[in-house]
Length: 139
Image: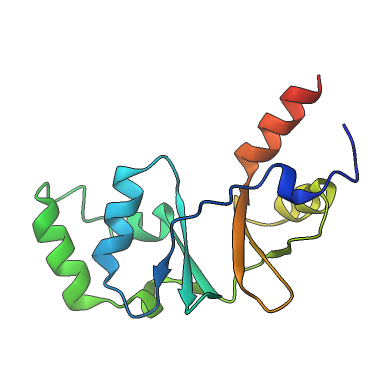
C-alpha cells in the first residue's frame, strides 16, 4: 500500500449534504434512498456537522411506525438538523494522505470523515469502506 497516496484518490467527491436550515426528514430520506450512512451538514458550503443513520436510529421510530410520512412529520416537528447532528465533526484536509485518514478512522468511534479545504468547505467524504476497497485493490 502506498502510504503517501493523496486522499483525493479514494474520497467521494459527489457528496449529498443538507443545509443547517433544512428539515430532518430530508436526512432520513437521503439515507433511505442511497447507499451511504452519513450526511454532512453545511452552512453555505462550510461544514458544520454530520448526521449518521445511527443518529436517526437512536430515535427508534422505524421499529414502531412503518409510515414514512408519519416518521418524517414527527422528525420535523420535534427536531432540527442542529439538534440531531454531531457539531464540528472530525474531518480531514483535502491534501492529507490515505494513511492519515486510516489513522483517524482507526482511532475514532466513527466510520466517515468529511474532507474539507483550508477554509472548511466540504470537498468530499472518505469512509472505512473506501479505505478497505483501496487496500483490497493494493493486494
